Length: 323
Image (tube, rainbow, N blue to C red; front, side):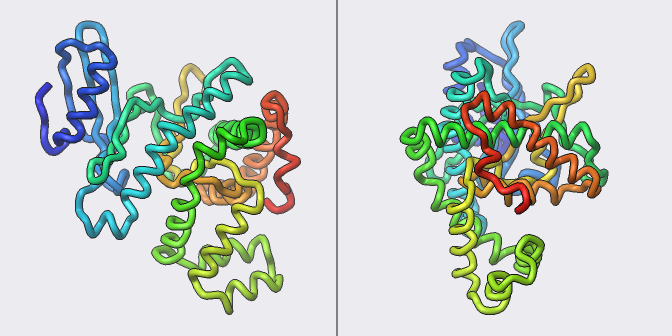
């Protein structure tokens, strides 16, 4: 295989060679192309890779961390990539195994993880390329319709329900695979408050806390760093589960195949142990009408039967009135 810079620097080549050897390709043809449009994947270089030999074909999507030191420091690049690497390589792998034990089926909510590296300055994540399977993001200029909202809620309910059950029934394993996630949660929360509009976060708090004393204190008296710690404390104390993280519309990949709508979640760099109530609220920032928001929540709660099969009623853990 030839190295095609800049889409295939040496560190990417090394990871791909490991995948090629594991998949038992002998002398494949490898083609590289741009993996995402401008404006997407801004935390690195996205590359689509097609590996073919005879009638065999492997379609991959490679995420490579940027090398610029100042940018890496500013955007917490290493932390984000290591967090996503851990999610695919460890957390999702264990949750999927647990889900299959309970249901006899894989979770099928994220792209298949194929390989990667968490070596410093060589952070790489390789997944199946769901785009070639017909998955694509919705036009963010258009409101989500009923069918897309239903599949989003079913997918999130499956992720959260599996996480709650896993935490409840495999406590030691759950604690082990998520033990490093709190460092990321603190850093990314603090980064969000510092880099983005603090007022928007406070408005979200006001929506749920109204004119309560807690909100007035948060808004007027608490320094930014203390506020960050309090947000984290709220998330840890309340119903936390492993969540998607970045609920931006670009990270929902839909496919309509013969009238059967399916969804894959992508970009787990911000995945964390998080209050699922706030995660749901953040998801509702995607364009939808009030009527569709109501349907959005109803479809989430309709997954009670799935939760029961997993061995836990997560409605007992979540306050619907809060949402």
